[in-house]
Each structure stands twice: as C-alpha cells, then as structure tokens.
Image 1: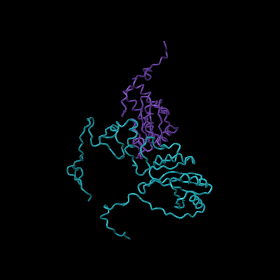
Image 2 (image 1 turned 30 degrees about the horizontal axis):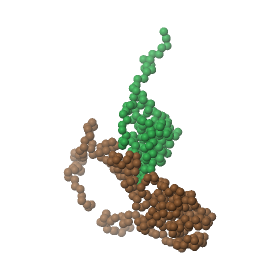
Image 3 (image 1 turned 90 degrees about the vertical axis):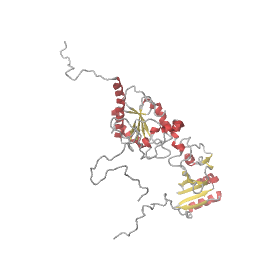
Image 4 (image 1 turned 180 degrees about the vertical axis):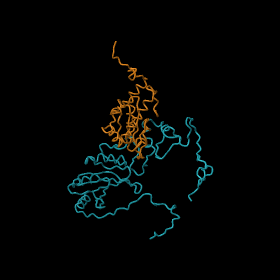
Length: 264
Length: 169
C-alpha cells in the first residue's frame, strides 16, 4: 500500500490558501411554510406594503422600508410579538454600500420568532422604538455607538460602551482592529496632552519586540559589558568562543557568512 | 543590694535596640502596606483570593482599602480600557505620597491578549509602575511574592528619599 506520488518540487511556492478569509455560502431563501407566521406577514404586507419576507434556516425574516420601521414593529407587537430580544446592525458598506438594522422579535403567545430588517445608508436616521420596548433604549445607544446609526426621538442618544469623546464607530468593518490615530493616543492625549506623545511613545503592538537598548526593563542584549564596566554604545561582536573544540564543526565567522537572496 | 539583678551581659544583651530612623520608618512602612484595590478583570479574582483565608494576605500587614486617601500601594489587577484610563490616573493622583504601583497580570503590563483599539497597552503609559507581575492570571502566591519584593524595595530606600518626578509629568 503506497500513497500515489505527487511531485513536490513546487510545494513551497504554492500558497496554502487562495482566500485569506473563509467566505461562507449564501444561505438559501425558502418560501414561508409556517401558517401562523405567514398570516402575520400578510397582515404586515397589507398595512405597510413593500415588504419582502422569506425563511432562512427556519427563521422568518422580513424586510420593511426604513421610514416605516416603527409602524411595522408596532403592528407586529400588537400581533403578539411582544419581546424585543435583540437590536443591532450589520455592516454591508463595503459590498452593498448600506447597513442593515435588525430587530429580533419573540412571541411567547404564538411560540414564534421573527426577524425584522431595515436597510439604511451610512449615518441615515431611523425612528427609535425606545418608547415601545425599554430594552431598545440601550440597544439603540449601542448601535449608535458602534455603527453610527442615528435613532430619531431617542431619549438620550449618546455613546454607551466607548467614551463620550471617542472618534469613530468601532464595529464598522472599515475601523482598524488596533485603532486609528485617535484611538492609539486617546489616553495620552486626554491625561497628559498631545505634547507628551513623543515622550510617552507609541503603543507596543508587537508582543515579540525586544528593545536592545532598553536597559531599564531587560538585558542589554547585544550591548553586553563586563561586570563593573560602564555601558557602551557600540555593539559587542558576537563570536563563537570555543576554538576548535569540536572537530566536525567549523568556527562561526561573521565575515564569512552569506545572506541568500532567495530561498533555494 | 538587689540579689536577683539580671545579668544582661550574660543573657543575650541589653534591652536596647539600636537602629536608624530610616530603618525604623521603613520597617513601619513596609509592614503595613495598604492596597488600593483596583480589580478590573480576572486578575481581581486572584487578588481577592490572596486576601482570603487560604493565602491570608493580612499576615504581611496588608489591608485592602477602597479609598485612595488611606492607601499606599495601587494594585492594577486586570485589563485597563481606554475609557477607564483617566479614572485610574485620577485615583493614583489622589493617593498620598509615598505611593507604589503593582501592575498585576499581562493585561495591565502590556495589554495582554487584547491587542485592540479599546485597551491600554500597558498601564505604565498612564502611571509609573514599580513592579510588573507576569502571568495570566498570576496566582495569589505570586501577588504575595510581589508584595514581599515591594517590601524589600521599601526597606532598602532612604525614608525621606526625594520623590522623583513622575515619569511623564
């Protein structure tokens, strides 16, 4: 039993992955089969108009026009979807140039769940539902904080997770994970002022970084001096100390070493 | 003539201890370190455990205080978020001199695994740190060891040492 031979000469040249990120397949949209949900969504269509609804993995999803979000939610609430479980947004700005705000509803009476979605442009305002559900108050603030969605008639639309004077909306996909210029200097600017940036220095984002000249925290790597000697600036030449101690090995000579231009 | 007078010279010395003012004051200081607890994340659980009966932090004379006015050691235990950084600095400023800081755990030391926009990448960016305590999270005995190192540091420095200008301001 032998494994069939495949040429391995160019294995190093081939990248392991062509896609850096896994892009999942779009989930199929199925027609709504559940009678109760179908009935409710037909009522919604008659009252609001211009809705689009389907099943996705047995979850009912309905799109309504953005200006009518409160109207639609009020109707669904009167139909028994009395709990707002979750409210947030999804960033599709890069692919479609829009955000989706979603409302997860639960009807304990009907034992059904429903997801209402609204498509908006970036920084477009929609109506707040904080007076209908108290849980929407914080959720909308969080949505505003992290995505920049503005909710009209919200009792207090201010940041909730990030500081009040924060710049940018961190859950947008365009926001860098390690923060923009503002985020990198936030605490320094706030506590000391911008003039102390140089003195305090950049954040260390590289966990493997070793500062050879940092004598305060760690060793003087590469700049070693003998006991009692004053520190010096020039690099201590590294030489292999043992002379011909092992027969088979040659001494390491930094003059003779060669840096290859490319991998063999 | 008292017949039963104790012969001090033969029984271990006179009842007099010779010391310096430095040593006396540092002895007092180092054996009553009062910690301003700054529990922010999981390290705080370890800090609480070290205060509990099993590890018994009190035997070093340490007492956890919730007020900066009566505390002299600030133990930053956990992840410092950027939103929280100004408050850490404010409480540090409210502590009376002399004061020391222990940075407990990877998050307080370097931001730890939170290499993100919202976390301070090392609490030494906002307050000067005396002891960096490695680990994620460090066990209570590590914190006790850090307290002992701090005691050693306090005992070795002059009582009225010139309090050096803080690192950044």
